[in-house]
Each structure stands twice: as C-alpha cells, then as structure tokens.
Amino acid sequence: MTNYYPIIEISDDAPYSTEQQGTKTKYWLYRNQKLSLFKIGRVNTGENWAEKVACELCALLGLPHAHYELAVWKNQKGVLSETIVPQHGRLIMGNELLAEIHKTYPEKQRYKVQDYTLGRIIALLSNKNIFLPINWQPPSKDIENAVDVFLGYLLLDAWIANQDRHHENWGIIHSHSNEIYLAPTYDHAASMGQNERDGKREEMLTTNDQGRSINHYILRARSAIYSGKSEKKPLLTLDVFHQLAEKRPKSAKLWLQRLNDISLDQCQSIFNRIPPSEISAVAAKFSIKLLELNKKRLLRGEND
Image 1: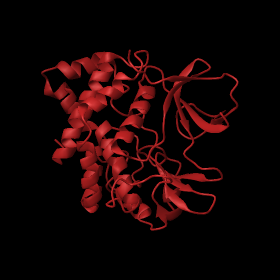
Image 2: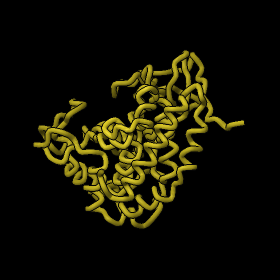
Image 3: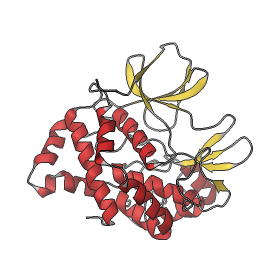
Image 4: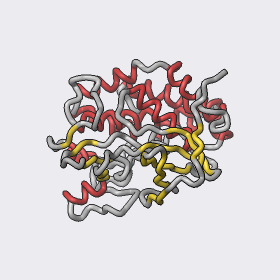
C-alpha cells in the first residue's frame, strides 16, 4: 500500500481571517492554537500538488522553506502551511524593502516590474545585518550570507521551472527582538507546468517535433527578475541563477552538488506519495521529466 501524503481535513468552524496579499484566495486559520495559512488552488490547475512537491524538493536540497500539506476546508481543496513568522515578528516582502531604498520603485505593481532587477536584490540582501533564516542550519560553511541562501532559491526555481519569484515571493523576517533574518522560501505553486492540460503534456512527451517537445518547453521558463531596467523581458530562470552564481561561486558549487546528489528515484518517490485524486499519471510523468532535464541543464551550466 502506498504511503500517500495526508489530506488534512480542517474543521468548517475553524476561526479564520482573510489574507489580502496575492491573487489567490487565502485564509489564516487557527488550528491547534497555531496560525496557519490555507491557500486554495485554482480550478483546473495542479497548484496544490505543485506546492506540496516543491516543498518536499526543498527538503531534499536542504533549503529553508515553508512546509506545506495538502488540505481541504469547507469542501475546497488547497494547501495548509504553518506561519513562517515567529510570534510578534513581521514578514517584510521584497517589494516593500526595495521601495524603501528606491523611492520611485513601483511597490504595488505585481507583474512586469522592470525596476525589479537582480542587482538590486543582491545589493539589498548583501546587508550584513540580515541573518540566515531562523532555526536553519546551513549545509556548509560556504553559505556565508543571505545572498548565498537566495542563490539556492534561484537554483530551485530553475530546477522546478518556477516562474513566480516576483517581489512579494521572498522577503525578510523582522523579529520581536529587532533582529532581521532572510525568510524561508515560499509559494512555489507556479512550477512544473502544473497549469498545462494532460493532452498537451502527453504531446510534449511523445512528439518528434522538437519545437513542441518538453525539451523546448523548459527553455522558455522565465523568472520575474530583470537583468536591468531597460530590458523588455525578465531573465530566464536558468540565467538568473547563472548570473548570481558567477558572483558567489562557492555557494553555487554547494547548491549544485546538493542537486547532483538527488536521484530521480527520490523525485519519483515524492510523486508516488501524492494521492491519485490530486494528480494525474501523465502530470506526474511530465513533471519528473521536467525535473530530470532541468537538473541536467543546471549541472552542465548551459542554457540550451
């Protein structure tokens, strides 16, 4: 019998408040005297399984991350995540941080933010007052600062084809004792082609037309991060990782080694534990192939 990940059933009368951030429907719930965020996946997408799979892949890489469980509340399927913010602390997202430094920064704009550049992110996270994520033990002394950890987040994005590292999808945690920490990585639902239809997935896996194949599909994954304010398109996920990796070669080598050590069987085991009610066989097959191909691209250090 397969040991499926549980689908947590949340009591209909769980006390809650609505979360305004983001485009998805989210609720803060109190369960077992703990604050957790319940995020409802969009209809006809795989956002819920993608979030859970990405969470487990973070664990394999050794990245600090929000933990997600599949859940259902009031007959609505989603994922449940205990808050990453300690009591009396505050999560300050990238857009707010960048707007404090750059007075004309479009803090409220969600997409196609050309002011949202890799250089600005690096400069911000290079602040020596920003500590590594709370209660996280780095896998090596080569992880020296917040930039090195963020590089791991970018490797994850390139691996899983996460196209949603916008300026609200990372941040810092300001603790009650006035210390500042890089926040764990969170919100990875826009990854692994979770919104594609099974017919298209099947075609991409089997076609002889290279222009319509999964090999071509993975080349198009773009981050939300720009290389410069004058650029018309954001960087490809692999290019963002490469550009920062050049500046932080020791931590890049470490994260690539961590990726290299993860086997295809380990990835397959994660998908095997997603209940069949939450993911189709072809979606799982497609995602595993995507992870395999992107891993090879990252380890080759190439973008083709």
